[in-house]
Image (tube, rainbow, N blue to C red; front, top):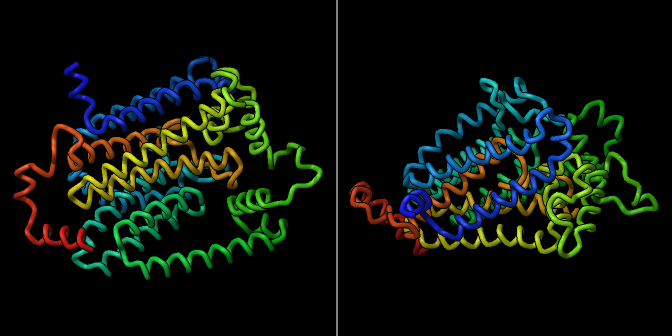
Amino acid sequence: MDLIKKLFKGDKAVWIIFMLLCVISLIEVYSATSTLAYRKDVFWEPILRHATFLLAGVAAMLVLHHIPNRYFSIGVIFLPLSIIMLIITPFIGSKINMAHRFLSVFGFQFQPSEIAKISCVIFIAYFLSKQERNRNAAFWIMIIALGITCALIFPENFSTAFLLFVVCFIMMFIGRADSKKMLLTVVILVVAGGGLFAVFKLTPDGFAKKYFPDRAITWKHRLEGHIAEEDENKYVINDENRQVNHSKIAIARGGFIGRLPGRSIQRDYLPQAYSDFIYAIIIEEMGLIGGIGVLALYIILLFRVAIIARRCKRLFPKYLALGSGLLVVIQALINMAVAVNLIPVTGQPLPLISRGGTSVILNCLYFGIILSVSRFSAGMGEENDESDEEVEQAESDEEVEQVESGRQE
C-alpha cells in the first residue's frame, strides 16, 4: 500500500480517468484489430504491440509526474529540434497513406508532428509566463514559432496543424496576450482559409490531380463529400464515403446498451476501426451509454485540469497544464465529431484509446505533466513546489512583482 502511494501521486481524479481510458483502450483495440490479427502469424501481435506502447507510456508518465514541473521549461529547446525534424521529414520520411509523417531512427518510427505539439505547448506556456517583461516581443516570438511549426505540419497533416494552432491560441487568450493582434491574426487566417477553400472548390479535378499535391486532392474530396447535398445515391457505399457510412452503421447498430465487446461487425469494414474510427466501434459494442461515458471522461478531465490550473500560484505550470489538457480533450472531441459525421474525416486518433505508437506515449506524457503540476504547483499532492525554500530563494523580487501584476490585470 505504501508503495502504491509513493508511485501514484497527484490528482486522484486524473489518475482514475487515465486508468479507465487505458482499460477501454485495451478492450476496444483488441476487438477492433481482428482484421490485423487475421493477417498475422501470431494472433496476439496487434494487441501486444499496442499494450507494449501503452506500458512504455505509463512508465514514462510515472517518471514524469515525479519531476517538479519547474524543470519542464527546459523543453523549449525541443521546439527548434522538432522544427528541423519537420523540415527533413518530407524528404527522408516514410510515406504512409499518401503523406510523409514518420521518421525512422534505428528502426524506430515516430511522428515529428507529435513531438512538435508537446514542444510548442511548453514553448507557449514559457513565454506566456514571461510576457510581462516585454509583452510585444513575447507575442511575436510566440506567433512566429507557432506559425512556423504549423506551416511545416500543414502540408502533410492539416488536422494536426489546425489542432495545435487552436490549442496554442486558446492558451494565449487565457494568458491575456494582446487581444487586438490575436484578432488580426484570426481575420487574416480566416480570409486566407476561405480563399484556399474557394480555389479547391472551383479547380477542376483534372487540373488539381496534375498540379496539386496528393494531400490537397484528399482535402478537396473530403470537403466536397461532407458538404454535398444528399441525393438518390446517398445509401450507395463507395470508396469515397466508405468510412463515414460504415461508421454510421456501427453507431446505429449500437443502440442504447450496445452489442458487447468483441461482437462488432463494422470493425471488419472500417479501414481504421482501431484508430480514427474507434469511437464508432465503442458505440457499436458499448452502446449510447458507452459513447456518452467516454465523452464524459474527457469532459471531466478538462474540468479537473481547469481546477488544477486555477490552484497554481505560478504562471508557467498553470499554462502548461491547460495546454496539455486542451490538446488531449480537443483532439478527442475532433475524433468523436468525425465518427458521428459532424465534420470531415481528419485522421486524428482518439487520445489514449486508439491504437498507436508515438501518439500513445505522448498522450501519456500529457497526463504526466498534468499530474506533476497537480502535485507540485496546485497543492494536490504531498509535495508543494511553491513552498520549497530553494525555489523561494531562486525567485527574484522582480519576477514575484510581475506575477502579482499579472493577477491584478
